[in-house]
Length: 432
Image (cartoon, one colour):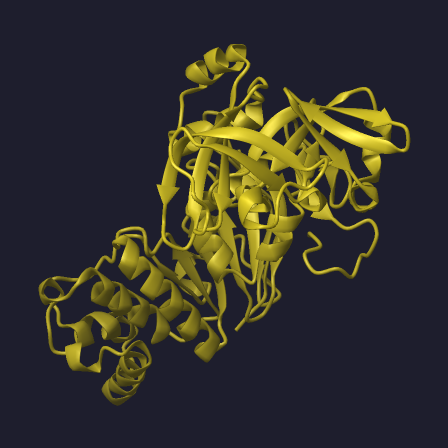
């Protein structure tokens, strides 16, 4: 096992493209850290630089306290598991798993012992004499992992290893990967585009955008305290609802108003978001997670100052919950953060987003109890948990209150945002 440290790492290609910018992350000994972000954000490039498959342009990479900038991939003592299994079709499972050890001219008895041990961990002992063509996708992925396990490396590097599996098998394999990592106690850096995968697997999750680290924290910290609008929109499924709201004071009470909706912001909200005091009379971006809304009819009626009146435009009944889609009479938020988020999931093109912003309508989703009696066209009053609201600066997208963003200086365009806790530096989720 080993600690992996990236210190001010850059990757700039010959054409000037900056794929990774001033990346500083420390992965603890035995820790499972996930790199997540949109396609092309630099997460795989960062992983390949750790592996030695990609040269770094600046900075340092340390594995087990050894600077490995100029160390060849084969000598870094890390094992990489790829998206494609890269199994040799003419070799048996046993031969595939032990192939790397055979190239190192290790003793046959040692190879067999390691292969058998890996197969036992992975639950594929009965497959050792089969060829890859006889295996399912999940079994092939286990064989690829076995090939990494037998090397007994300092760390595992995994590049979207489950992306070729169907949805049900991915859920099963997520649990398997975690079980194996915990059994071996090995350090893992795992790359995925799937934020659900990241949240369920990582001890910590690093959100990367445009080659820049946005925030690194425990999954729940990312969810509860996103450092900026991009992280807030990327983490969570369904995605956070966002709208521009005006902060006003009525006597001793602050309110957030968008369209015909007015939400009262109590003392608890202000204690979590003290910066709101400086935005009275101004607009901010308001974020409401779908799961922080509930059908008032199922929870004893409307809560004064904390409701949204809506008409369902689409209803998805999922058994354990109901997703209610509706519109609010306020313009869509159109920022670079939002454009990248919607384009990444293919929900709407950037051009169409701009057109939609002129319609004075924003689309929302609420996740309500399956006890709710709601269908398309149903009028519904939604209670909002105002203590769980999120607020962001309109110009910068930085969260107001809670976790703060700190600029990191460096070469041009390197202003990365990372999470810090100003109130308690010992709080879990503090960033590198």
